[in-house]
Amino acid sequence: QVQLVESGGGLVQAGGSLRLSCAASGRGFNSSAVGWFRQAPGKEREFVAAVTWTGQTTQYSDSVKGRFTISRDNASKMVYLQMNSLKYEDTAVYYCAADSVRWIVTTNYRDYEYWGQGTQVTVSS
Image (cartoon, rainbow, N blue to C red; front, side, top):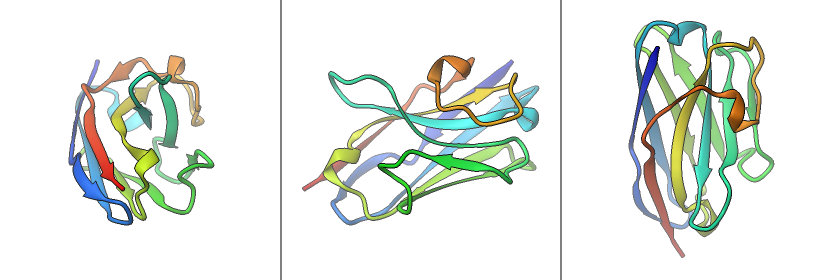
C-alpha cells in the first residue's frame, strides 16, 4: 500500500511558477512509477508527467513539455512537479499517482492504483 499527499498548490499569475510536492508513505513507493495528472472542472482527468521508479525516464504531455519538470527523491519518498511559465489553461486540481505494476511510465490514469487527494492550482490571466 502506498499513501500519497500532494501540496504546493495555490494562486499564481500567468507566467509565474509553482512547485508541487507529493509525499509518499507505505511500502512499494520506491519501486513504483509516479505520475502527475490534472483535472479541470467539466473536463476529463489529463496526464501531465510521469517518472519511472529509478527517476531516469520521464514523459510529459505536449501541453507542458518544456515548462514542467518532474523529479523524485526516493530517499525521502518525494516526487516534485516544477511548473514554470504557467498559463491560465494550467488551472486544475493536480493529483499524483503511483503505479506499482509497470516498469515503464504510462499516460493512462487507469494504470495507476494509488492516488493522492489533489491540490488546486489556479493561474490568473
